Length: 505
Ligand code: NAD
Image 1: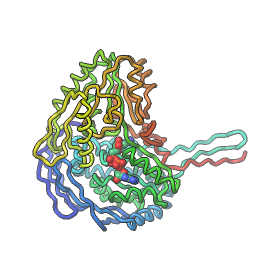
Image 2: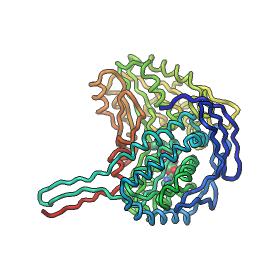
Image 3: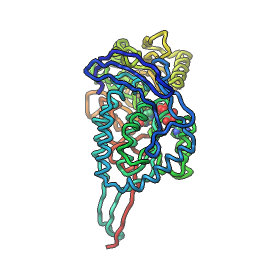
Image 4: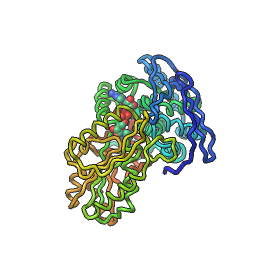
């Protein structure tokens, strides 16, 4: 997990139209990270910088970091055409060889890890430690684990039909669309299994955070045959062009539930396969036998993961009345000791909100909280005299179950804590949501913990933890939090067609 880092902040400036230079002296023995090349799309193995541009901003300072291409439909068609062409060759590469190539791709990312960490911190706005955690996750832990997976082939004799072979074949061209909160992790957990299974990919990172992914594409593209991996950037039109493109066979999308519904609608015309990982409004239920002081840090970390901008962040906490005051006391103590600021500052615990749109949404949530008269347990400090998008850590005490900031996903550092008397009531209130991504239960008695877990309506229910993912373990969703499965063998298989060969006996 995230470890402490010691750094000295250097200067940050813009060199040219599409180039960033961030100098950061990292004093824990790491080399100086210098980022001074431009950012290009990767199409058919070529670096492309054409057409209009989009500006990428550091949310901690408001400074423009770089410009990236805002490609038109002609260039997207070129990327999809290149992927279609590359698909037949790539699927024919033996599985073990594809795995070896993708392993060398991860090694290449690792080689450039230090500068990628700086770049990710600058564009996403979390802390350096969070960026290090994300890059390490991909290069050292989760990425290699994904590459260890196999596609199952099963044989069976079945009466009336004969000898059955079940096999998984790649689908074709995958359109991968990722959000801004974990730009590298959520792009790689799509492209690694998609490519391992033998597909070609057109990846579109979020226009708010495209830089680290574009830089990685630049570093790794020569390891792959041209067209196997294409990375494109653009504005509001690009996503719908991808989801409706007849040359794309599958969409793997991570983002909001609102956009997920648009994606599904748009993909229907060409009956694309669709995997949707969407928003969450995760509840946590703390049982009366939990030890507040022991679990408080883990609760807080999950609640304020990426400054509260995590899909599987714990968003509503239901605490038994016997220990309510101890839980809130412990959470307020941690919140008071957590500094909000620029992620390059080693004292910072939580960075800024990632973009203006998100910041404005949070301001209107705060206006609604004030109008509702909800009791505010804690509201922290934020840096002043800055263009950075810093939002105070906010804890609410027993707001109404019907308040919009309780029923809807709040993507930022505002969290609600509720007191309950009996468990049935807590479970009912925890499940009273249109979302069903994650949920958790906290306590001591394993039998009771498991009994509560069984009643929570979510794709993943954690016991005495929250927000933990491993690509070997499938991630799915209930209700409006998604469709299909990512991660695990089921996730790898979802990048494939299932084929049955039935031989007469
Ligand atoms: P978003 O839905 O606004 O955007 C996600 C991606 O979709 C971006 O790349 C965006 O450019 C693209 N997009 C926008 N409109 C599109 C359209 N009509 N068609 C196709 N693509 C389109 O989400 P966001 O604000 O980037 O991310 C935050 C949301 O993502 C939150 O709701 C969060 O819970 C969710 N999320 C879910 C998971 C998960 O695993 N379930 C993980 C991270 C984030």
